[in-house]
Length: 365
Length: 261
Image (cartoon, rainbow over all chains, first blue to last red; front, side):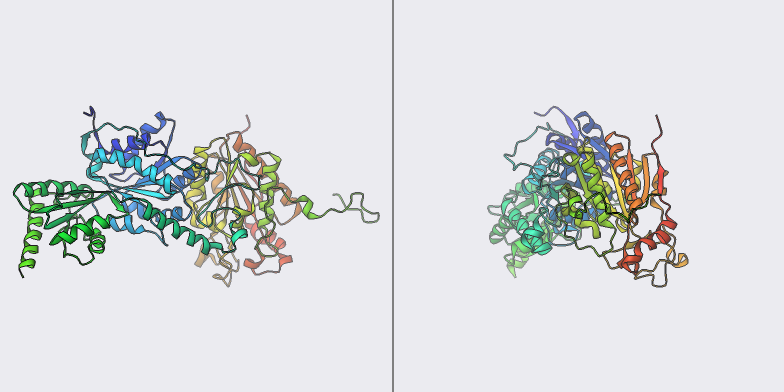
């Protein structure tokens, strides 16, 4: 049994350190601030560097440089701060810069930003959305592994609950297997050799333009092929419950899924054929699992704390096999932190039961 | 003043300019306009790195502008940054590799327009990097538009009657601003419009790299460069135009020296 009871922010910070992250930077904004505080304390103890960035623009720029120089590097903010970083995140995908970016979001209104890419151009970033503190400590480490494996930014999607809930957890360094050597990084030693290195969103090497003549267009083709390979190469992660005979399947992610899992469990105890699906990777999205569940189910319901964002992906996965109901809601608490009055098990039970009743009436009609 | 004797044949045989090409310039082909001052500045950087034998300890961080070709033309480890972001990218590189020589190359549009806060914060933090600003007072790459450093009266594509301070405000003397910050230890403004200025500028660039490697603090070299295309003047007139307009607004010289020990 774990011996320490720590809050999510601390577990996330320890997860980063365990993964070998030695460069962190950020601009305060609750609930990301708490992660920044823990990193400011932890990194100097581990020979790393934590910089108080003057804005989110500096933060993402510094991470770009630190990652290009070979460090496991991370920054983050809240969705608003990530909006400021989007130009760089987009171009880091084209520049093949591996880094981890945390969105300690206020509620779940940044699903589109996280999964569609808030910036310009054709690119993708893997997105990991933990449900609780132990999973956060694990996924934080996986994020760095995926970033290095695919040479791409990876997003970690947390929230206020994850930042502040205290849970018993031992943060242990995880080994996710072999990685390609980081011989693409600049270390300053190849100058004058004729083969000096280049980390750039515009081309892959210094000789690209001379060799291929295709210029920027061929680099974009290369980038798109990389994104397709990444989508095919990352197995979507998902948690499911009670799907075998479920007539109604409730889909939710992150903290919301923790409530759904609990309430569906209660309804199962009452004998109602309801199941749940929790995407852990929001990109690549677990289309297959949802599609298969939709073949058996009479209906699918989506609970998310926004005005309906992930429901687009659920509909694409279901692809007309069953009706898809939105049972989520915007987070309208006064704090703005996403401490929602709708995280209420009785209210959630009503929402799920209404969706269950609706699918029965649809079947009857 | 030394005069070149013309009555007798030269004692030193003529040499091709090619003989002088710094070995760190990978490819002499470029798509810069005739009369552009940027290649001279880039050459000065390459020569300084060679002179200090830092080629295997240097990382350049290059911004977005006409000079972006330096990313691939120069045989140094390079990180290409986005428009305005080079100071933060260079900060990240230097913090991870503190014993390397890290410099950023930016234009006035990149540094003084898009990335003004980045350069000021990086200087204030005293990051041990060298910033090299190629200042021609115009967005050359977009075809000649006003930047924050365009001088009063300067004609550009979007100030066709000349920069009017009532409408377009006043130019920013960035090197003077930087010199006021505690974190900046060496600040100089040179130019590449005459042989004498090229020579002085080259020395200041080398001095900045030396100070960086001694861990002195943030170093900043502004280089006024010719842009006859963007200035809408004859190629041959550009060096004089620089002298009469840019250098008249931005005085050349060393603005800040490290405190002597």
